[in-house]
Length: 316
Image (cartoon, rainbow, N blue to C red):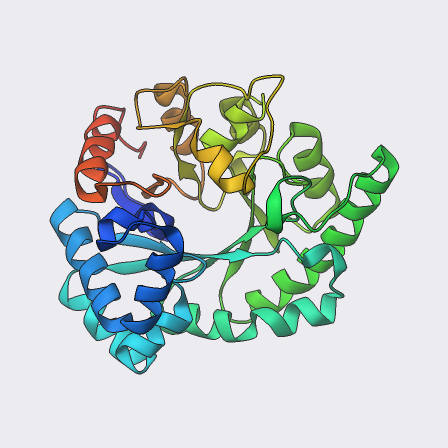
């Protein structure tokens, strides 16, 4: 990842482009179907939008804008690099849905990430961001309710899996960073402290998400400061505040989360404090913006970047 001494560069997690309206359809199901049928048109439309927004770095994510669809669109890693390079786009990181990792052995997890890691290495990306098992909410919640002891045992198992995967990724020059997702096993400060204590700091880092930590009643600035040396990348996203105490997960958990996300600068995240902490971390060179399923991603990215550009520059 670049280390920039003055003005930071900007990136975006591609989940930002997952609003059906951006693709001219009405539902998420229609969006996924259209994208699967038109992978090259999908990627070119998104890349053109990035160029228009002036955001050169990306974090790949789960389908449809995943690494396999990029290969389907452009034929090979070289083809991907050519298409990305023509628009000035570079790959910073890749997100992996690891909601099922509570049931994987270390060997199974290492095998699962191998193809992704090869793609990331080929594109020059240096970080794999891991989404961990969910505890509640719809089809992405394979983990049943558990006691505190069961929760700790799951974190212990996950730590062993993460160390094994981190070691395999290190051979390709890639670092593993654990994401802090609402309603997951790694969103509270205690969760993060436990996992960080049980894992090798040379192999496993952290991807704090300012919105998800806020929604879960955590202090994102304090947590990022505590683990600043392990923050490999971070998601810059705003939120309305902690979830209501009577929150009902009445649909897919991620759809519920989006109800409480806010455009950058219109929520409660302390952006000056967040930027100051991020300037002390290995992620200082790039500010990775994330706007879950933005209806107008170009306009919203420009607006988010304008807010971020008003913050203090990266320390030298």
